[in-house]
Image (cartoon, rainbow, N blue to C red):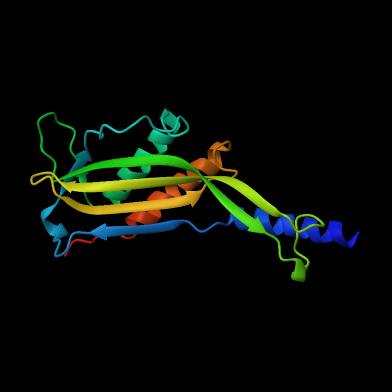
Length: 182
C-alpha cells in the first residue's frame, strides 16, 4: 500500500511539474538601436524552410499567433502597412516548430520516489514547441531584434483553448523584451 501511495504521489508531482513547466523566453537586440526611427511594420515573405510540423502549419496556429503579434505592435504604436508597394520600416517573420525531446529519469530510491519496486530508469518522450520572431529593418534588411520562446507542449496541442493561451503567453513574454522607443 505504501508503494502505491509513493508511486501515485510521484505521478501527481510529475504531472504538476509538466503542466507548470517554465517557458524559456529570450531575445537579442542590435547594439545601439534607436527604435524612434520606426513607425510602420508588415509581415515579411517567409523563409524557404523545410515543411513545418502539421500541428503548426494550419490556420488555427497562424491566426492566433499572427493576431497576437499584430496586437503587440499596435500596443506599441506601430502601424501595419497594407498598401502594395509600401516599404515598411520593419519587416517581421517567424519560425515555429515542434521537436520531440527525450528525458531520462531515475527515481530516487533513498527518498522512496521510484516508479516501480526496482527503481528502474524511465525514458520520457516530450514535444517542445519553439517560436522565433525576427524583426528586420525594412530599408537595410538588417536583423534588429529576435525574440524566442520555448516550452513543453504536454497536454496543450489537443486542447485548443490551452494551445491558444500558450501562443498568447509566448508572444506576450517575447514582446515584453522588445526595445522601447527613446
